[in-house]
Length: 81
Image 1 (tube, rainbow, N blue to C red):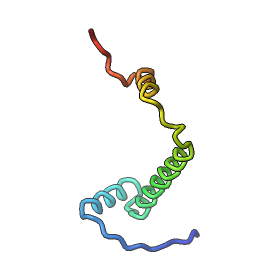
Image 2 (image 1 turned 135 degrees about the horizontal axis):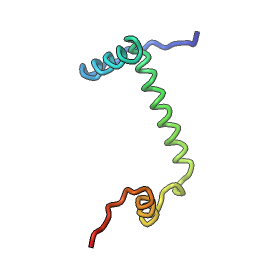
Image 3 (image 1 turned 180 degrees about the vertical axis):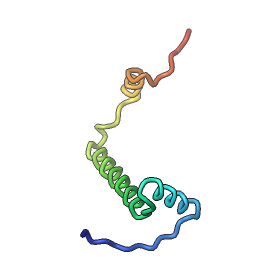
């Protein structure tokens, strides 16, 4: 079995209710599993952010490039004359 760390956390009541609801719906009431899911998501975001940072400024499109991408993806509003 993997080593485990035990934590004691304080949350606003509504957030605790949200965790319990999701735990009942998704993991048979296991709140720790819900928290583990959230931690995996945070780890994914951290990895994504590190990857983006590794590109330096190379990953940022210019305003013109961004507009072209928006048009190609159908995200720009059609201008009517």
